[in-house]
Amino acid sequence: MRSKWALAALILAVWALVASFAAGYYLLQYNNLSQQVSGLKINVDIGIDYGNGTRVFFNNTQAWTGETVLTVTKRVATVDTATSSLGTYVISINSKASAGNYGWTYWPWNSTAKSWDYAPVGADVYQIVTNNNLFLWYYQNSFNPPP
View 1 (cartoon, one colour):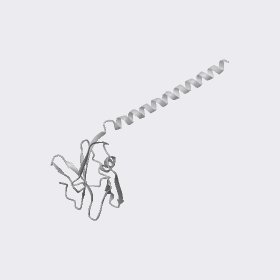
View 2: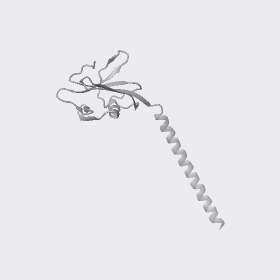
View 3: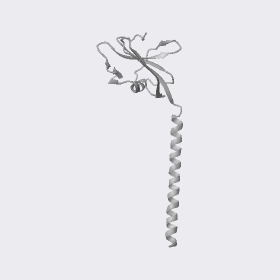
View 4: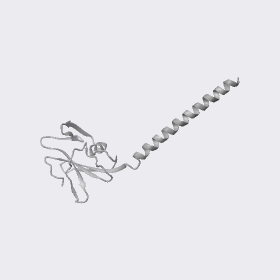
């Protein structure tokens, strides 16, 4: 009878030890992940200019640092894309599709110069999305900055 209780106590002690180690491991993993992502939630402003006088802004769109302009735009609009040898390009935004020489370009706002800057790379790789950035998608037939 005594050996049954000793065996039960041993099994219970081993279970408690394994459960404690597992809980500690997952707590450390949670804290590590929490530190990596804490404070990285940001707000980005996205504008869409349909080229016909209609311009809509989605201010304070929640994003994460390191996200692309394209990813953040997909949060506020229906975006269709295609891929070529040059990368991903936007076919349409909210059903306004590229046609003829007209297509979508995006422009980051330069708050120092108070003007729209030419985007050096595609929206799927532009990762300098920081807090309070402003980007404008512009439907046009050239690469002139938006008015």
